[in-house]
Length: 555
Image (cartoon, rainbow, N blue to C red; front, side, top):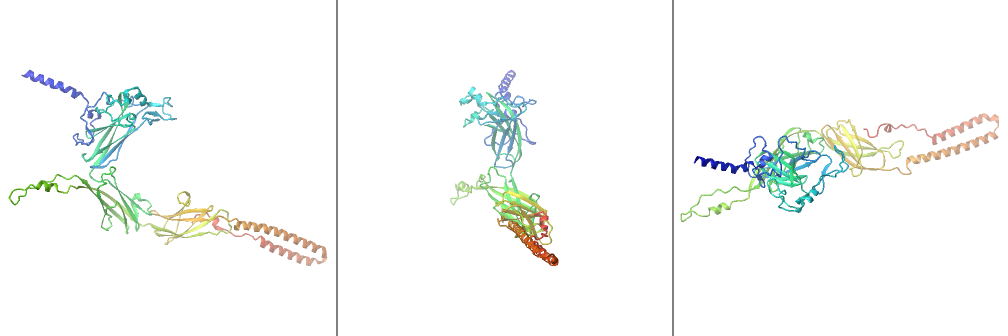
């Protein structure tokens, strides 16, 4: 009897040897997890247990100490980048994407082959062979391209056949995603994605691992492995953007008194899990104005006092969900004294549109200060220059503002559409208790301009805009008329001088010498006449223009 027991035990041990020697998915991919990791998890929809066998002959596994880049890829190492749209609200889908980064000068072409980029030099210089891996040629030399589903190398690591969808022959990478003791296999090109429903995922941070293989004729070679942490939560991921007109820097959470602040709620829901949910936003702005409830994700609020305030937002979403099984009611006796059979009907008539409430929270501390509330351009005036200059104009802008007193003014001159900036000038300003100032700006040529005047201080920037038209110089402009007048006066002066000399000559011929006193008198009279003509036609220009001595555009 004892020998029989030993014999049966030997048979059981022999029968178990193949099972023990087979490599499992968790052996090939590793059992690493975050602290507190537990292998037992609920079944994920569409995922398989990592207790399944792994075909190590077709998909060899990296071992500790292996030089992973030495024989896995020609020309260097391939890097895999794993990203996700985490965090995910429990019950929603989370998507993972793997992108392959090839060594320098390598890329994937339209046929799925890996080729060298043209005119790109790597450490080995320019390659004479355009291909790193010509998988198209390999397909033609083997039965890969015949579409046969019976080929033993057209399978995933667990033995499942490749899907023969359109273009599958150009997909030369195998991706294995592994998390929570389960895996999914994907055939792809240099990028692959997979989605995971989080209904059965434990709340908190979890670890996703992706292992990538490349095709190598009738087998596969591991080229990269990458891990990333994702988070599943029962709290709605909420973020709030805050913006305000005239606010100089909203990122410091400092805003202006007496101007509305726009609060816009952003819910992180990339899988649109909450699209069918009724969402309420409950605001408490911390200024004793009470509780505001809205079903709109955007809301305006104005603080009328300076100070520091605590903002609190609660987002409530009613998510449609399955109803729990109804509790059976005790049978009710009828008037023959027996229990009725309508209890089941009463249970089934309960409302089947059950809802699960999910909440999200946002808190912030904001500071309210004084600032420039409004700017207005009340007048624009062309500055008359004593000496007209071609293609040059000065314009004064009279500006008023409400709120604090500005410390700087900036002028941006753009095209008529206010899109293309032509010049920008900023200057410090010093004004009194009343915000009223004149800004003088120079325009080098005629045309239509968009002018933006911005007044600023440490916390605020206020803007006023206008469109102006700077006229061009007319051909008969004052400057050209003055030049013409000067030319005419010069000719007239020469004519008057000639007449005067002629008169003087005749007078000299017919007057005796002894009449020299009279000559002196007449000479003086002629000199007076010439001097007066000179004053009229050649006036001395003694005017000074202090505006042109200063830089145009400075207050």
